[in-house]
Length: 61
Image (cartoon, rainbow, N blue to C red; front, side, top):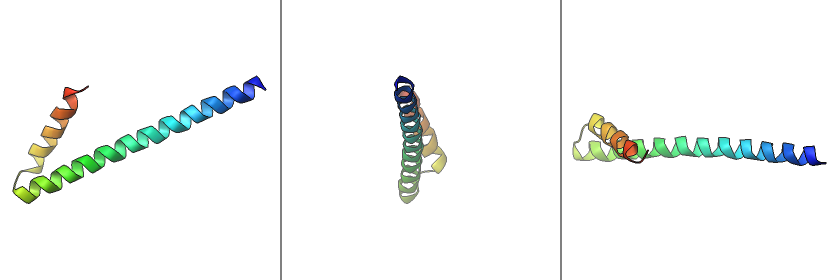
């Protein structure tokens, strides 16, 4: 009984970890795409936008 509960908890933890990772990657992709589109709309190079996003991300890590 106890081993079944531990297995369930480990499986749940793994699934939540994978789900969080997928959501994190998806959110980052949306952020970069949205920033690039806005930058191109006002005439800023996508390279400058990419470097700015990376610099901003590094500030908090």
